[in-house]
Structure formats: structure tokens, C-alpha cells
Image 1: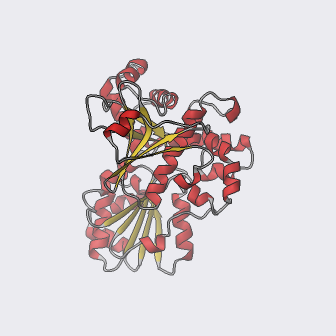
Image 2: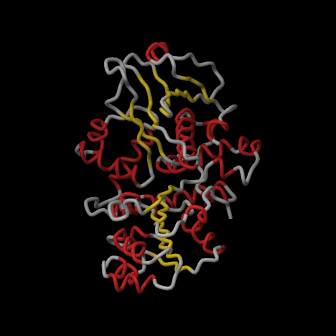
Image 3: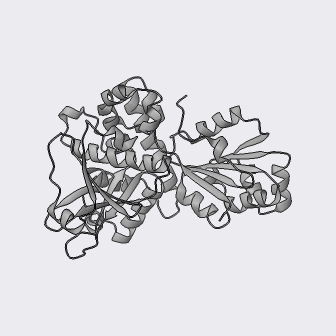
Length: 373
């Protein structure tokens, strides 16, 4: 089993709910079961798919809920987003039973966050589990081996089942199964979304424009939807851990672009599967896109797992000066340009002029590990 970055024993607290978010198939259930296999706590493991569990925890009936949880030190609910009003049920448990601990996993943040947000205010801790980070992969490979496998990560990503698959064909099969059976499952569960074709068409457009400025009006015209619907679908994809939106940075609105956004896939393998492109790196014309997407999403994992607090932006001016990623943290600005090759990159003149105290660095494939680990 691949060891994950989180130690649940340190995160689970009495009379608080630990919520583990993340995409499907990234190992949330495995992480939970591994903890339960080693804990000395008396626990109950249940699933939100269980109809009887749904009936009890959504009932808001104190007698039923407290009877359900009685005589246990820990209640663990997998797939908790399947339970209507699950937050209220969990609130009753932690408010009424002294020192009880609760952990819940959920693959869909928009469902689970909506159900747990208000009822569990001040009563919950949330963590996000992503496809394997390089911090976690260092437990499998040394730095030399990780660098040797860089092409593989850029093409196939780092879902646990993809990493452990033995052959190229097996990796592609796993990714195709994730996209076909899991990727859209939570999104399609929404009543207002009736079919998967328009969603896949939208994702394909985003995949081809990864790292570029995205115009919602242009996308809406191409897939024949109104702009508000496109924006809503993209927001849902972000909340479902498929993509990440990055807005423009500006303190000088006359020159800097802020009206558009960039989108990145949270896993390179998913992006490549959406467009059915698994060719080797040396035969691709989108290596720059793959490299930028990889660097941004691995940086997101680092921020999440190492509790680094800050905001992500891109920077671009109307005359074409640009920086791939801007980070604002601890009152400072950091600009990063991602280059697959080792060519020298000049600092944009307007960036120096407008933000003289900001830092700037080019990240290439020779020195990228320190940036993401």
C-alpha cells in the first residue's frame, strides 16, 4: 500500500467531524480503512450508500441517531455525500455523545460541503486528498528515479491505480475507466444536468486550452450553451476536483488582464484521457501545456499538504507580457515561469516596474523538484 501524507490518528478529535474530500479513486477509502485496521478505538464503519444508514442519519430523530452511534468511540462514514442532510445527523452525534469521534469521506465537495457547512460550523476539520503527490512518491522512489519517470507522470498522471499499473496499456485502461465511470458521476447526479456529452465536450475544450486564457463566451458559442450555464458547469467541475480555476492578478487595471481565467486539470492523466492523447513526450506538440499543468497542480498539492496559505494567479498584460503563476503569500509576491527547456527567460519589464519587490524564478525540468516537494 502507498503511504499517504495524512496521519488520521493525529487529525481525528473528540466531538469533531473530520471530513476527507477528494476525487473518486484517489484513495480516501483506503486511507480510512488503513487507519481503522490499526486503531485501538471501538469503531463503526458504515457507508452512505446503505439505505438504512441514509434513513437514520437524515431523519433528524435524536432517538434513532443516538441509538445508531451508542457504545462506539468512533463513527466512520464512507461516501457520506450520499446521505441527505448528513451534516445535521453528524452534528447530533457529536453534540450529544461525549468524546465521540467522527470521520466522513466524500468524493464530491459541492454535495458534502453544502450538506455539512452550516450544521457543522466550528465542529469540523476538512482535508483534501489528491492523486499522489511527489512528496508521497518519494516513499516509493528516490529523487533520481522520480526524475526518470517524469515523462510518465506528464502523460499518465498520478492516480494510485495508475502509478501501480504495470504496463502502458494498463495505465490507459485505468484512466479510461476513471473518466468513463467516475469522473462525471457526481456532476451528473445534479438534477439540472441531464447528459454527459455536453460535459465531455466542455472538458475537451478546456483540455485543449489548458494554461491559456479562456473566454466563456467563445466556449458557450462552440458547445451551444448560454454563458451562465458554461460558468456553472465549470464551477461544478472545480468543486468536484476535476479542474482548478486561476484568475488574473492585477493592481493596475489599465494594463493587466483580469476579465478572463486559466483552467488546469488536477491530474495530467485525466486531461490526456479526455482528449485521448497518450503519445510519448518527444512526439507531442503540447509539452509546454503538460509541463505547466503538472507544475501548477503539484504546487496545489504542496500547498494543501504542507499547510501553506496563499493565493494563485496568472499575470498577463494586454501587450503580451506574461508570467505563468503568481503566488501571493505572507504579504509578498512570487512569480514563476515554467519552461520545459533550459532556455533563459527574461523578467517581463512591466512586472519589474509595477512590482519591484516581487520575486521571479524560472522552473525547468532540471530544478523542479524543490518547487513541488
